[in-house]
Length: 301
Image 1 (cartoon, rainbow, N blue to C red):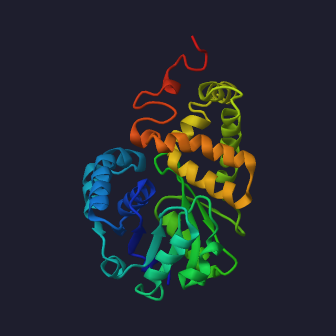
Image 2 (cartoon, helix red, strand yellow):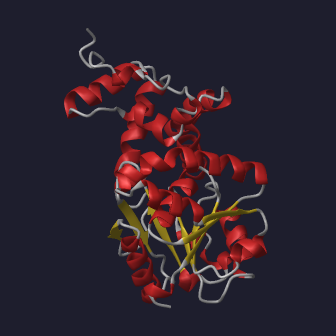
Image 3 (tube, helix red, strand yellow):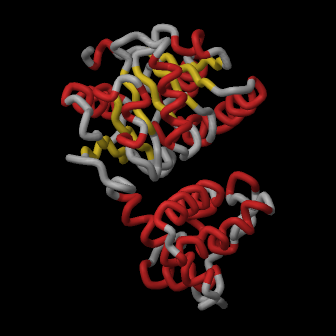
């Protein structure tokens, strides 16, 4: 398969990242299918896509007519066979569980064309953890997106069994949808940026879980010294506290690390209360007007 052969994209999982990746591909001329388990989930996802589309169009520099054409290229399905029909590349954004990812890839391996490329948008796992289960390890690699409203940088990460052809094809695809591809030579937890980013979040969570100081003071310290518009806890609100919790808890359990477990426990309090950050209107801050956005936040005046 060559890059011009890719015409249709299947998004597995219609959460925040699935929505962002789907509309991004549609804006760049690809037919897109969003697959999820329930029609209600898909209906809610498409409503969010429609609400976000005009703002994303400005970010991606598309006009109103192009926005409507992009929306018309997106379809939804709860039927695996229907969703997989004539698909050239898959982007997977299901929850961070290697067994689940392996299971859903195996399901689609059985019904997709033999040339279909599989990519995972996993934030914290390695493709090798589910490469064998997926059924076509040579055609699997990570294509990891960050928040597409903030950056065009994506990570392309092979596992030891990924073919060179797949790496090159996925890199070309990333560039076709307007992204800047950072290509890794080998697997590495957290890719490049996320590896550095999670170290920051782990440190901030450790300070808060040990009650060294408050969430607000930690953010003020980071923002004041680094001259940024947002601190680590504001960033966690943006990512989703539930997402940060799942990643933190997964590695805490796997490594049996006491501080990581304490960090996960700190996050779980918010998750249990439904305070997941920006997407629920409340997390470490309340939205749409979080305290850290106030001009006097860092100075405290």
